[in-house]
Image (cartoon, rainbow, N blue to C red; front, side):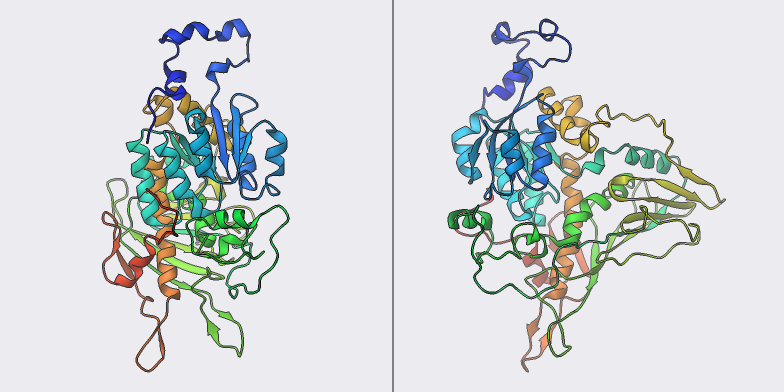
Length: 487
């Protein structure tokens, strides 16, 4: 339940409250010194891996306090422990909220994907502001619930797709709004991921747990997912390739790479999705599909309707596993497409030209039909006052917005609040819904495998439902293990 009269409200209204007499003004403390009353108390769920930089960037060189760290394997979070030795340590975020919820203002959530939804919801129900790594959640239903909960509980939210704060995206919006590439009908998005094991047999055996992880903590790692025994092909990091925990290459990079066209073209819910995936061979040269694991590569096409901003319907084509599109005629043969080396990128094909960029919206370019090529000026003026901070100030903009308050100018200026990143994530996870349907096999009366999900799937975005293949709807949400729930 959201708490009233918390120190979060105190920070915002302290200048008007009676308690303001206890606050030392900035001018008394000296230039560059932050008054204790202006500091947020922050916690981290997932303090290793990407969580290391997430909580450190939000700490912002002492502009805020870090009061708690939560991780199931502090061997992976050693750097955070070293940086914040006075922070209280937890293995279970539910216990952390129970004991410290009233004193925590904001939390960074950088645990595996399957924990995002349940941890973020618990935080918001405690009135705690949330910074959640991409993808926002493990499935479409959780993502929709988080988007609605951020409004309901009036918390400041931000997803960790830091390229959203890259000024390159602002430049791309301006180019498109000037009509430089005309209306877009095709968007290509691609990545060289996975760079972890994917498309492999389900792990077997019973390896020993790491010395830094107890059996109880492995159970906490599993959280709401189906229980499986520990294996180093799950933890650390390799969880990304298993549907039980991760969302594959598309979930990992889609929120970075699909972000620029989604933002520039102001896309909404897609209407249909279709895919194919790479085969694997385990024995006897017979192709197999492993429904428990993400495939080694995928090819996904998502369709969006025409809009007021773009008069044509759009086909967005995603490829991973190192498969990329070819050079359009407008792009010279020796130019990279997307980023340098062409391993990751975006191309928006318009009636008057092509707009491209790399990961995070880096290296934006326009290739016009008259032969002119536009690049971003070095002196480009951006509205992001934090752009020179780590990760374009994506974390600091979030903490600034918390201090300013829900609904403030700073809050409305956030580039990936859940109002935006929720629909973006749902689009990304639409691809995974198609992939999982494609991998699903049923036996017919003769014992033969049928892959009935290998078709174009029609999507009702408002109601979160595939309308022409009901079996696919099992992947819209997930079942939760006993003791865990979303709401």
